[in-house]
Amino acid sequence: MTVKGQILKSASVIALVTVISRICGYLRDQRVALLLGTSPAAEAFILAFRLPNLVRRMTGEGGLSASFIPVFSGILQKGSPKPANSFAQKTFWDLAIILAIISVLGFVFSRQVIFIFRLLGTTHVDWNLAIVLNRIVFPCVLFIGLGALASAFLNTYRVFALPASTPIFFNLAMIIFSLGFVYRPILRWIPESYRNPAIALSIGVMIGAVLQLFVQIPALLRRGVALRPEVSFSDPEVRKVGRLMLPAFFGMGVYQINFVVDMIFAASSRMPAGSIMSLYISDRVMQLVLGSYAIAMSTALLPMMSHQAAAGKFEEMKHAFGFSLRIVSFITIPAAVGLILLRRPIIQVLFQHGQFSSDSTLLTSNALLYYSLGLPAFAAIKLIAPAYFSTQDTATPARIGAYALAMNIALNSLFLVFFYRFLSNGSPALASSLAAYFNFMLLLFVFRKRFGRFVSHGIGGSFTKITLCTAAMAAVSYEALRHSGFEAIQRLVPQVAILAGLIFASTAAYLGVAWLLRCEELSEFLLLLRRADREPLPAGLQP
Image (cartoon, rainbow, N blue to C red; front, side, top):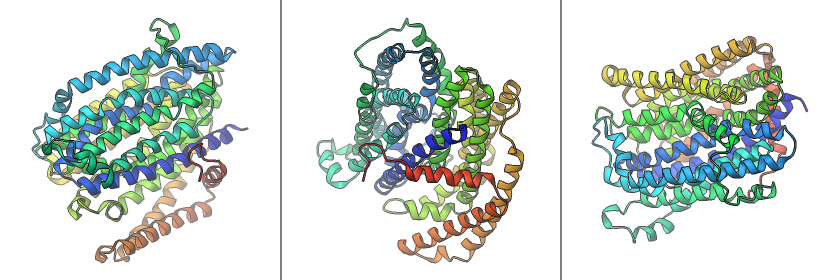
């Protein structure tokens, strides 16, 4: 099978399962918004959830895979899988000890962890509740990290569906614990001052993290990993993973780290109440696109490029990256423009229920505007970082990520001091978007200097066509929204119908112009969809 075919086949499986996961994630967030709105309890829950979720996203979206897969692939290249499986077993238990220590420290020093977010002096967060919630959810770091290592092991063997489906179990656990017949009995056992649905949601986070690990254990056992306790911090291959791991976490997870920085600045007393929740919801909406395609491509790319790098096939590696960048840009550039133009109807239809009011919608749509500006850069970083990781270079993305983090902090400070009246709660989102473009351009510059020009031809022409298609889509979307009368409609069903019509018209305009311009990415994107449609769902998700 060609490089394109292998990437599309793997990415289609991941994308299909990830779309299901993102739908469950939306239902989860919709339940959180309905129960908590943008209240002080909501802010407390998001802050407590933020740091464990940072670990979940950094590991689940490639941070741990970036250090493990290249080393594991190198051992597999030597022949028998037994030494590789022994290495995986040692890595599993070494990581378990480290994460267990971190979990205990996070639980014991919960007050100090939450204090980080109080540095800018906000008054609209229930801090005592945040400390309690953090103690409930922080131990899930252990199960999340081990689950991510299990996913990396299975991805190396080109098993993608099951690892990609683990967030579904995480989201379903939170949804179940958000239902009244589940959380109300739980709250009877809680002291009256803390009887809040956020407590039950936090328990759901913990249960979901445990499921993310345990649903993968049978697949590990079938592939020869016995999981007998075996600790070996002195093993040279394990130590190599350890040296690669921290910079890999930072390099791949700089977006998530920047998001935590955004939360800290959103907690400032200058920001309007509800800013933290608005950033969280807008990020989740953007993740519907970023997670479905960019992360799917990134997950499929890393094992392939690691095998290519181990075999010295660097030209094929560059071709794989260039092809993936074209496909993801074909999706994310128009998606960013669509989110900007339709941000308010999207937030209103998806979340304006229960405690999530019209004021919450305005606040969230403002944050979504500025996060959407950075969507193409966020996606491109997900693709170019594996090109470095596949050659066991995690230091370069980490170093460049540090520059981007410093830029994000500087921009956040600048916007908070001088421009907060104009940008309001959107200033942290704008800072992250600008830092992402800076991050990608530096990564791209070093990549081309090190590996040479892309093998994949026609990248400049592809981006020109994508820009023309996006401009046509934007014109149709803007005019359709202006004449839709959406703002005057109060009932949900007509709102859903109009939003669906707006999205359909915008998508049809984009694809129609792409067909007229004979965009190569259109046929490749349709091939990805056809492959996804033919792939069976993983065990346990069959209808």
